[in-house]
Every structure is written in C-alpha cells, then in structure tokens.
Length: 78
Image (cartoon, rainbow, N blue to C red; front, side, top):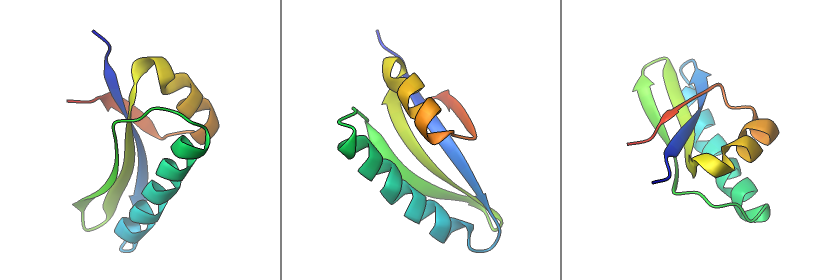
C-alpha cells in the first residue's frame, strides 16, 4: 500500500493565514500545470501566529514536489 505524505509550509505572524491560503492556490496550480497527482491542498490556522499551507501527495511523487517547491517539513498523512 502506498503511503500519502503531507508536505507543509509554515507562515508566521498575524497575516499568516492569508499568506497560507494564497500559497495553497499556487500549490494546486503547480500540480495541475506539471500534471502531478495530489489528494488534497489546503491551509489551516494553527495559532494566532502560525498557519500552514499543505499538499498531500503519494510518496512516489514526493521528490518532484520537494525538489521544486522546498517545503519546510513533511509528515505521514492520515
């Protein structure tokens, strides 16, 4: 069974959520332009001063996303 990975970009500060939402738009645009598979793209506010943008991808596609987009971190997707 293939594993799904969540690639994450952190945005800090009071305007972090708006920046994360905007970044998520570009993540989806990139995936579609490059004809890459993905399961989910989104953003989430973690606290008043930390928000994230993320994309969930198949483990086999992760190197392409990692090398092109330089996520801050990644984790197994649930």
